[in-house]
Image (cartoon, rainbow, N blue to C red; front, side, top):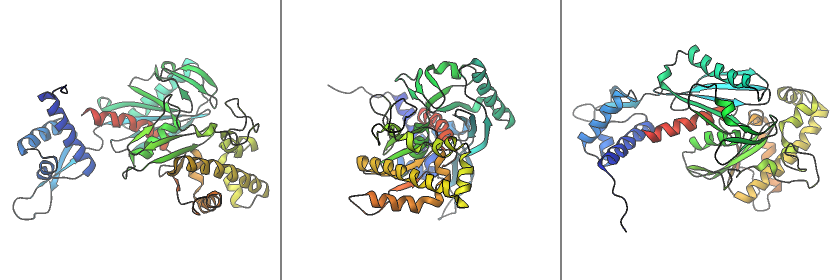
Length: 375
């Protein structure tokens, strides 16, 4: 049985996509190099370059140094040819940003706003999207859409947030969240969104486990060039591993989950302070907070070590906690090394490079990825 024959139209589209991706990945390239690396004729390359230029996706920005003969033109992508909006929803605040096709943040704002299931909340999100576009004078025709990150578990069809304890909803229709936003929307779990940012920058194609720690604790599994989400889109829900049978009550209703011990609520809400205040007190030697932090690190390292034992790959920590951990990285690695039966090193543990904005960026980047695939 023979496979389906590829039509000439499909071949043309594939060539155009390959050419754009090569330009996108190299950032600066000459047409002769495009032809050579993709084994395409110069007329084919030129025709596609003409189309991509007319679509304002690429531009010519001078010439390369001559190696003899005519200087080759420098072809580069137009970074802001399209703009994407990212939203991160938390119980008491909303973060919004705009990125270009490379994930560069063009604007960012954070607003105090308590999550609500009422229609007014969706209208508020719509207003934030409208405001960031108007404030930056973005061309509305170039807006790809809005990526929204929510701390919850979704059904397979992405029609409902099945459970989101940290914002207090169960079986919440996603359409209620997005209906006041006048652009295409993608809604995803916050940990998956943060992991997508890590994946986007995973140039070496390495396997990683991504652990997201905030008021909720989640994660995702990065398999080379994709996110592994499991049969029910719940792979990487590290926060609900049992680490202490019959232990502390978790937001999910079970006892002894990792989230019950390493949620940032343990070092903020439980103490009646903001997380930044907790870390400020650590730096001045607050004995009460130092004792709490010592216990917190024990559970954090227990969770990280368990993840490492299962996946035998780098463990990357993101979420709210990541932006505060640099001063404690050596201590965490030391504790991890002491727990590791197979090797005396904690170097497998890393912090995400996009600490404070990874979640909103990752939500937006998913639309960028779809756009690049569609060219």
